[in-house]
View 1 (cartoon, rainbow, N blue to C red):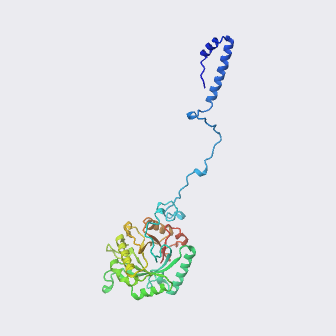
View 2 (view 1 turned 135 degrees about the vertical axis):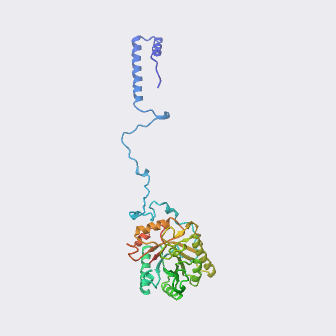
View 3 (view 1 turned 60 degrees about the horizontal axis):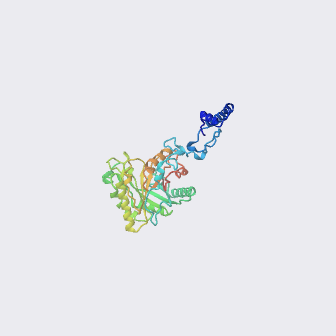
Amino acid sequence: MPVFHVRSLAVTMRRLRLGAPLVCLVVVALLASVAGRVSALHAQPAAPSGRAQPARSTAPTARPDSVRPARRPSGALGPQSGDRHLAYRDMGSDLDSLWPPRMPAPLPGAILPNRRIIAYYGNPLSQRMGILGEFEHPEMLRRLDAEVAEWNRLDPSTPVQPALHLIAVVAQADAGRDGKYDGKYRLRMDSALIERVYGWAKSRNALLFVDVQVGLSTLQQELPWLERFLKRPDVHLGIDPEFSMKDGGLPGRRIGTYDAADINYATQYLAGLVDKYKLPPKILVVHRFTRRGVTNTDQIRLDPKVQFVMHMDGFGAPWLKRDSYYSYVKKEPVQFAGWKQFRKPRNDNPSTPRSEILRLWPVPVYIQIQ
């Protein structure tokens, strides 16, 4: 707005020969005009950089919901975790992104991950070691059929492959009389027993897993003894660190351990059988329920001829088992994941519902029932 100097205005008007009264009237009118503009100028804030500023509304404006950041799910561990357990998918765990890990593409004839293995575990000589010995074999197989049907109903996208998981080398609490166990604190099952269980498996088009509890022996000593069975295309291997007493302790008094080097030996041995006998890929199941049960998991080497399953083998309330799954499977990805279901209330009380097992991430593709 132009600035008017009153004295300059008066001199100009005298030059125009205007009378004093008229000069006064003109000056008063101009001053009133200037005052009105100044008052209007101070009534609103100045627009920045010479831009016209739009009038502001005095009504409050609500922030649209669309601009609010999405709240990340808050998962938990422990007895209060409930449906928010971090072992489940999309509960806010950064571990979700680790699965599936990088792995070799499945070779022709591979079972995983397109099928889910449902395995009955134990030994026919013992009612306490699992369902394989708890019932006469016709009743055991009838129950297996029902279990397979239920899993197929719950998850038809992953057809079930039934299996029997036989403890073929059983750890012992003592050395045995007259050197019966060769000082190795383990007992090898008679070949006739293994053949009998293999026959049961064949009657259901099921796989057979031979499981090894080495005691004070080693995988290098025990696996060659099982080659006569492992060379068959439908026989696979399980190894149990709990009974691998590398520190010299006795089975059942301490919990044993395997290192990645032991697991790599088993993988190489099975891969050699695949090459030697022109077999489809083998499956290697490793049981685990403690941190020290398997050491140096980041050094486990995968081979396309052997599909690896880290099997959560612990028992307890469902939340406790999920804690173990989170700590010993989800946190340390190798290839595929497994889950143990105990039938006895003294072990799993209550038993974890199948639908909750399917919520785990990674979703187990090997379920063992003991």
